[in-house]
Figure (cartoon, rainbow, N blue to C red):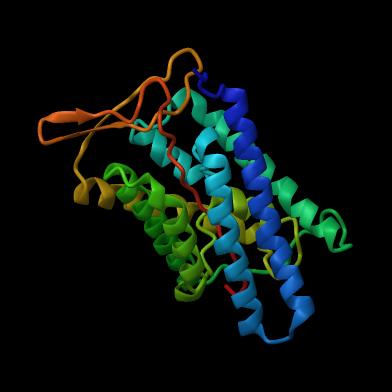
Length: 267
């Protein structure tokens, strides 16, 4: 009988996953600019790398801590009682530290300064609207699958959504406050200037709230916390349907693989 992951283990998984995600986003952006001068091809390289990389990271780290990699996702999961609120600060701290570390790692891998503050301004109103849309869509995708107990589809669905959102949003779908902060540290293809970050983060949080509201309206299931015992692991809720409960598993609770993160150029 295996024990549930501790908060320390889950936080480590969030840190590692977030770091690798940021390294993928920033690193593939740098590589893209070295391979071609065609901006469209650069964006395609960045999008495909992020979509596939994110999918793999969710599969790898989802069983440990849920693979949120995103403070907006963590807050939404906590709001739907899939994660204890007392654990949320540890998750968010790990995600922010991980994304910062991943951006620095990407810089170093390409022989750039460890920290180079981005000068890429992204303050146009249409890009902020795009971030609202990107984050709302991400949260809706995650909760739609979680609340209908189709967890095996979360990884490919989230990866596919982020990959497509690179192209249908004017902001190229950051959709993640931690990634936004991390990308400030790289003055490269994927960067964002510090002055632009607060607006992006606010838009992402608004979008996450909208996505949550839509998910609850479309999938009105009653959610109950499944406490995983002493470890206090984030349980994925029990869905109550047709008068009987479908347990996600108290002894080995299903995690909420989710996450985002996202990409970039333009904006």
